[in-house]
Amino acid sequence: MDAPAQVGCLIEVRRSRAAATGANLPPSLSMVSQEAGPLRTERIQAQLHAEFAAPLALLAVTLAGIGIYAVVSYLVSRRIEEIGVLMALGADAGDVLRAVILQGLRPVIAGSAVGLLAGASVSAVLHSTLSFPGAADFLYGLPW
Image (cartoon, rainbow, N blue to C red; front, side, top):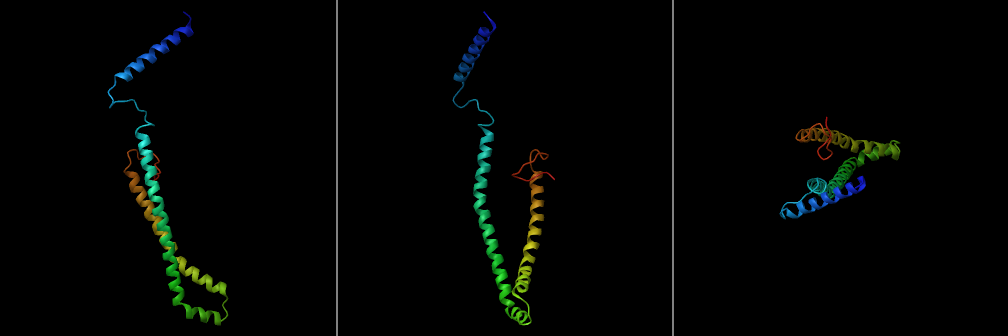
């Protein structure tokens, strides 16, 4: 018997033994790859979390924008007389707009800085709870 025929015979023997072994397993036991089993479950769970978090993030950004608009509107309504005096003294609309925008952006810049620092610290704390702290995990933050 030549070498290719022997290989073909060995392959058939192995296939028949594998089929016989799989047939003898109880229904509760089956051979599952990591990709089809636990990793798939984790990926589906992470995707589900992201799908639930996305509308909440959109709602948060929308409410923050409405809040910023309300604060700037309130500040402008309190400064109407001052704006009128500035316009009477010769200030053009661009100067007044610049002053109002700068006054409205100060709390936004301060809040963004505080939020970034708080987010970085929470990310570091969550990252320290990982099983493999040296590994990058975008769900819980990057290693510091």
